[in-house]
Image (cartoon, rainbow, N blue to C red; front, side):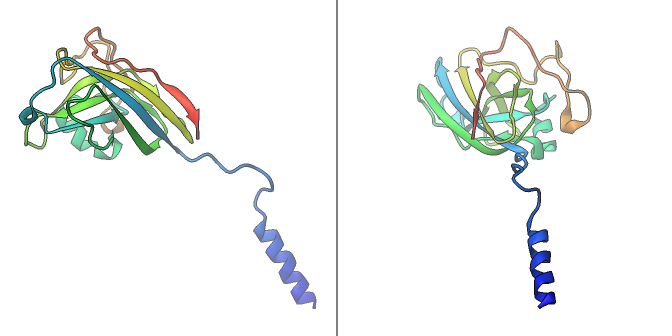
Amino acid sequence: MRVLLLLALLLIYTGCDHGLEPPDAPPFGSIRGTVTYVGVWPSLDSLRDLRFVALPFVPRDTLDLFRCLSQLVFSERLAYDVQADTFFVDSVQAQRYVYSGVAQKFSQRLFDWRPVGLADLFQVRPGEVTELSIRVDFDNIPPFPPGNENMVTQPCGLSGVGSRTSPQRSAMISPRRIPV
């Protein structure tokens, strides 16, 4: 009988962790966005793929995207020849994203991607949905690779964090956090 009582007390003791304390927030959040398009759409032979992409660093070239693939956040394919589209990316690492926007794959070659609309820095917080509104102007796409003004690169987490502020940005972003 004492053994049963001791076993029951042991099970109760090991079954209790921290009482009514809430669980830790997951280290992930989500990104939901709306993309609005203006300007003349490129032909299908120069628009092989179109996706929302977010990076915690500013790439020096397209190869940085593939060198740091584990840090790249991207959506499913976006629709072609529409006025607006939406995307949702779940299980996104909670951190700051300094180079983000809509990217176009413009040929069959693996590294032929370029931004067509950029967003300003935003933060994904654990357990929350960050909402974005991005405007893509196909008649005024941003340069790539980005210039060096007002920017610090952080390829694969090797150097300082930075962001780019330039009048040539053709996207606007309005982040809004929504608890999940």
